[in-house]
Image 1 (cartoon, one colour):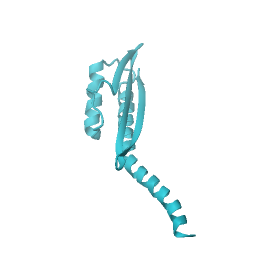
Image 2 (tube, rainbow, N blue to C red):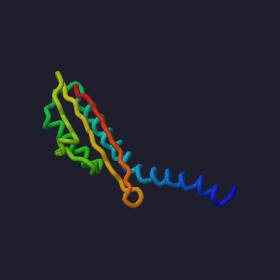
Image 3 (spheres, rainbow, N blue to C red):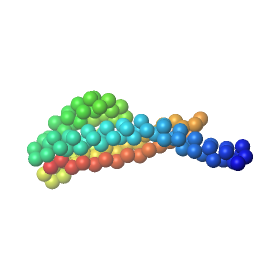
Image 4 (cartoon, rainbow, N blue to C red):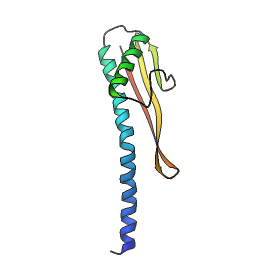
Amino acid sequence: MTFFGWLVILVPMALMLYAAIRLTPVYLEYMKIARTLEQVAEDYKGDQPDVGSIRTSIEKRFDIESVRVMSVRDTDKLKITREGTGYTVRAVYTQSVPFVGNISLQAGFDKTVTIN
């Protein structure tokens, strides 16, 4: 195989590897947020919590997990709504990371849990 043949094969593979390296922290942060919401839903299962106690519990867990992409005060990213006898907690956000030069990679996340 010629030098140009190797370039055609290796350059796209290197770009994909670099993109995976850049996106790994973003997905790890999402996994922290998803785990936090699931733990809060499990903690309040069968109880009758109010919005304040849910927010406080999420805020404490975000502090412990070192979640930096969102906070409890971001009402556009973290929504707590009353539905029937329980609550629905939804985290919706996008996160961009620089890739090469002025090109960025953007990932969108949406996690919903129900607290009954």
